Amino acid sequence: MPLNLHQTGPAIALLATGAVAVTASFWIPLDYDGSMSVRVFPLISAGVLILLGGLMLRPVKADEKTEASQLSIPAGPLMLLALVVLYLWLIGKLGYLISTGLVTPVALWLFGIRNPTGLAVGALTAPVIFHLIFFEALGVFPPYGAWFDLLDLIGG
Image 1 (cartoon, rainbow, N blue to C red):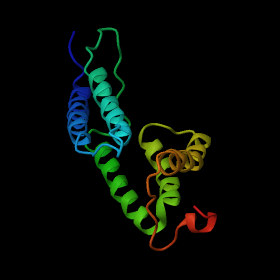
Image 2 (cartoon, helix red, strand yellow; image 1 turned 90 degrees about the vertical axis):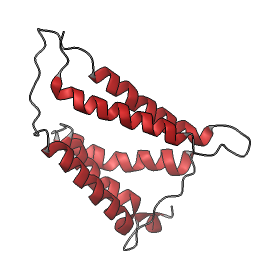
Image 3 (cartoon, rainbow, N blue to C red; image 1 turned 45 degrees about the horizontal axis):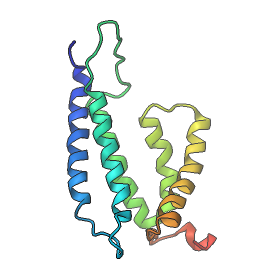
């Protein structure tokens, strides 16, 4: 059975990114007590990238239909890259919560979510969920905005 050529490039990119991320995560120092707790999230994330890349490399069965992407091959990754650059700039100006709330629906739309309710729910819940995971549970220092930051108002 042949490989799906539309998935081979992204699959290899995921595998390579995951491999680099696994290697880079071992440069993160261990906790003061020698545990890996600080490395756990990057290692899990890298492992998921490798797993997804491997799943994308599966052979295509003859009876499987491959749907054409709504975005062309060059347009999708370029739009996502532009969104990442905009997101990083927005975080520096408006802080984490507002930036994540603005960018989440656009990212979901790029990945095929078209339901307005789903986009609105994502815009409202993603910043809260990610804030609770990273800044509350993991104790990561949140990036604050230079122009305005919602955390200043809510006491975060």
